[in-house]
Image 1 (cartoon, rainbow over the protein chains, first blue to last red):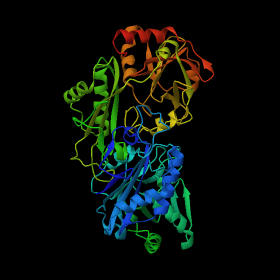
Image 2: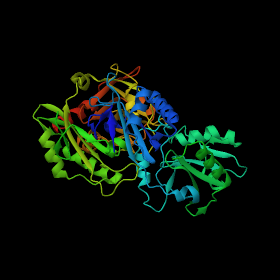
Image 3: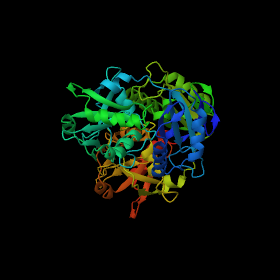
Image 4: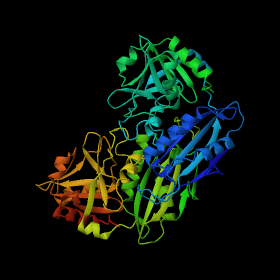
Length: 273
Length: 273
């Protein structure tokens, strides 16, 4: 698959890049449908906001979109991944203020997600690995992802996803997905991500569209107890769209009307690949 | 400077490497004196222990040492940096169990440390950036270093180092150094690193050699209060050796007899470049 690094076709990056040396950068994973990046404005907005928080130069939106179009291809479904790093610099944590950022834009094959899961629901486990509480990095899709890597190593193919709690025991998200709960009164809840977690683009899309669907969605800390008393649970990200959870360890959940309603709205809005 | 990636001379790494994608790997920074790696057995031991904890294949010690010798050169002082990553794999946090690890061995220029600091002491600040508490990654010299990068961005040249606290307010370490305190009764204390921080090789060397110097050293949680009541403070890492702290923000410390005694012992044992 094609990779552009600072606009040039290549498959490699300098070893000195701070993306490798320290994970000093951000990324976006974007669904491509017939070469069209879905939720592009939201991805760009998150990336730009992340740059602001990490003190990285903001991306040139027009250039980034041009490069995305250049590698996108025309397959029905594919994945674009953008990585921005603080670029090269000498040894040491201190960044060279004169160093140019590194911009990587690549296309990857669409993953073998089962359509079945979106319709009939996912089997999900609890991860033993906890997320640390770090407000300065929380919400960002940065390149320091050892917690997710270690969590994902806890199972093979027996589950579609694993849920992660933080070090205080609060429920935060899946290893690669955000989590929503539907409570008995129909209210939606998604965990507060001010201390840990990644604020997903599909999560933002849902948060911004629930009111129009006549739904209320609250962002707040979620305990295991709150989760266990939920009527419906579902997972979201840019590639899978929305996966209802049909089983969390031994506990069964229905693929319910609120999950289906939101899934249909995402489909109708052209947000699903 | 020379770089070997899996034994081949190059300056680049595949973009698909998990070291870049997720910071999924470990590193060692080693002082070279006349081409000889100092504290080599300790570096190897930490790297091997880190691989065990992260589930990475352990390095081939003989091969690694061969490659180190190949790039070491003969300068009076230089730096070797070893990076081990989980290698390449498709998109997603799940590692390919069949993927070979990536081994990067490189030589870098000796940094312009002032000799003056080792003799007369360092001027040190407090960092606002806190370290998250994550026992599963604590102590490891892994590639997820955004906390240190953000902390190091808080000052320019006005301080030699910044001290970091964890999210509970406990004092942990400098951005690139470990911290020791000398208490009024002459006892040494260095912060417990079971929740955050990097367990440095020079720290281990000191912990293992204090008894022979007639000193007692305890590893325990350190509060700001404990630190402020210390008689002497010093910082350690593989490159700087031992830096006494002469001033922490507005508070002055003496470059005292215990710091000097340990520094002299490290010098005599051939641990300082």
